[in-house]
Image (cartoon, rainbow, N blue to C red; front, side, top):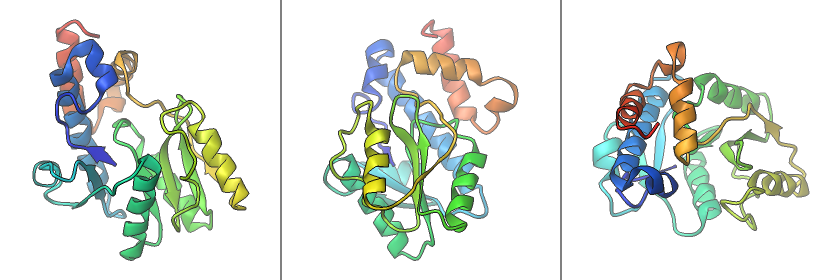
Length: 215
């Protein structure tokens, strides 16, 4: 799930601290590195669900992968539509991630697919802000309605919806999203040694922010 990196339209909380242009540049780096890392995995087929539909996202950022515009509606409706589309195309399972976690370990995504292949109906990757950075399923789960997106209880509401539907979800490791300047500073600090591998564009953008005195 991604947005076209238009200044002023992405990473608005971060833009309040570093400016819209720098925030969009960093977000574009996230997309570049996520695309490179995920598409290189031989067992996965990468799909981009992007917005807005009128943008040049496909041509600029997903020329070699499947890409489609997100549906109308709130975040829940758009995620459900994206999962439904990929499953209808023949996928046995789908793992949906946000684009604010360029540092997501590929092993975490692998673990999500392993659990789904073993029979789990729903996997979730908890985010430290109370939401989730990953959701995986073998069929589109009835967990997207009635959730207050962006709030601190997104994960709790999703777990409750799953259990009302007699689905017992499994949780993966907790990660942090990169939403504001504190998160960017944390990512910069974390990206040392092996952790920086596979994230060249993000690393370069973070080094620029460091040189400019933002982090």
